Image 1 (cartoon, rainbow, N blue to C red):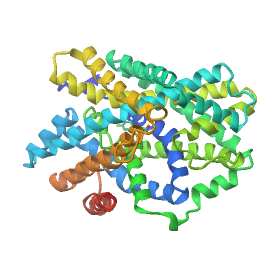
Image 2: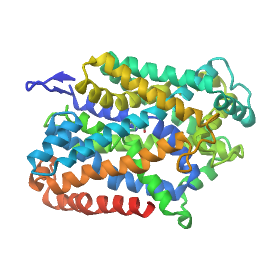
Image 3: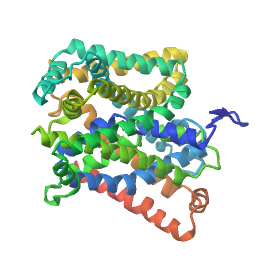
Image 4: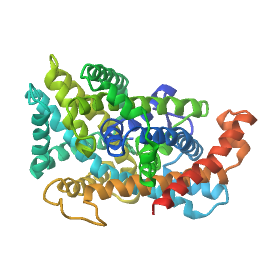
Length: 448
Ligand code: PFF
């Protein structure tokens, strides 16, 4: 970023902006969460509903968040405050920004737990734990990890410390530069794993599972899960993209940039599925394995290919890296919120916000062992945090963003800003005024 004349920093290039947004979007959501949700939800029908949500709802909301951020030139809460004032709307719109900060905090807490699993697997790859193991051996390794609160806390703490360290020192820029290299590397490695998948004998079944829908299995719960995940994977509804938009110059084409980010995010998620499901079928593993899915499947590949430890090491290093770029984007808005309201300064605010999320994360990780039977509303803490954010916070704040943009801003100015002709703009309007909001409302309330 460079500092623009008006004093608010700006991205030094469109490329830097797109990379940062992709860094936030691509993360555990794509590689860890998407495949296990597909497995849990019965496969292709979920995939297609998810894709529809991404392109018909996620993409317009991404554009809306950027546009609002660019107009407001402030953090999401102040942006919503100002936009509401300028458009003569209720002050309550600020809740959209506030909900975002709280949502980001809650997500960070359990996100760090899974980031910790990825760190633990770096260690396992290094010491050769995957070598020659079959699916049972790998499964036992994972079960062992989950059973030990102390080990889980150790890795969760390390992940959170890394995130806190980066955010406190304000060196996220350097990380974005590194992402230029590391993100494509992750893509290439996933591609190699998809090719490995083709050799397992389970690839055909995997393709069918992911792309041949059985619509009869679809229910409201699956649709809400797909919708929530579309928000999660694109980092929407948390004001994060709005903050990124506030650093944007007038010349950047929002629709084009959104298309790039969305396509990269989607390709990575689908590739992760195509790497994982062949192993599931070839090894007769459980499709509904849940959050452990990638940790009990991919290491089977690493244990069986030449130099597999190295491939495994590279994979978990890159996965951790992708997770950290997303985690810092979750911590940043929370830190900013604390920093503006307390005398604690950057470092102090980062420590307080990070430690609070860490503590909640500890509760979440205990759901996998000692607190396994401690249920709130029928869910353990980990599932509760996940459900609360993906199925409530994100859809509602995302809805707020799109309704505000579509119904409270001057249409003609938005049309010009998006560079759309009258015909394309009527399609855009149809989507942002009716289709997307009605879709979210129907899915949301049908599930209540
Ligand atoms: N989009 C990230 C992922 O898919 O892993 C997770 C995430 C980051 C969610 C930032 C929300 C967010 F604001």
